Length: 234
Image (cartoon, rainbow, N blue to C red; front, side, top):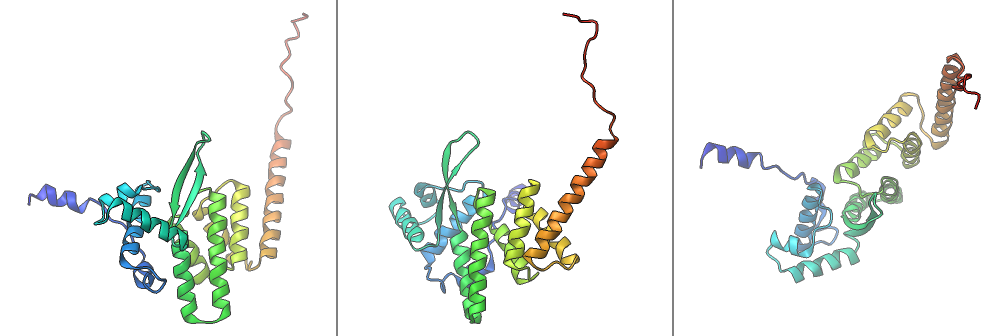
């Protein structure tokens, strides 16, 4: 093989797959064909093609188009895959697949292994968070975004109610991205804010301060007079 061909293969790219998918797919009731078609859907989503047809999936698998169709129906029916309706800026409707139900099932299984109602309640809250974020973002969450929310809850120990409040603050600021929300959560943590009530009060105080600064700036501006042509008597 020529060296340029080898370089081309190395640059072809890769798809990141969470180890949790490989560790838990059998435990949540998936078999190998089902898992494989979900991985292909994951790949299509990463390639900005979130609604592959059974024919397109069949081209990459050792299954017929009809077999892929049946697999998709089964996965949707059993809450491993979700089909969502969306609308673009031109009011044109289109559909996408979401793997959020799959990730939610895996998280629930992981927590159930630890046992205890608290862990189960937490996993349910995490599933609700995914839904709230997808509603506000008006699109399915990516696997990386789902992982970020997991980190907020599992490693950073942010409460779900606090994450919801941070999302609300981001909506008010018109900055719907996880990086901005992460900065809000970090700022609250640094200032000892741990509850929804404390975060809400902090946000209101911050907005009043920003409004006050804007008002002071406006006062320092010279008065604006209407542009009237005094020579025009008509």
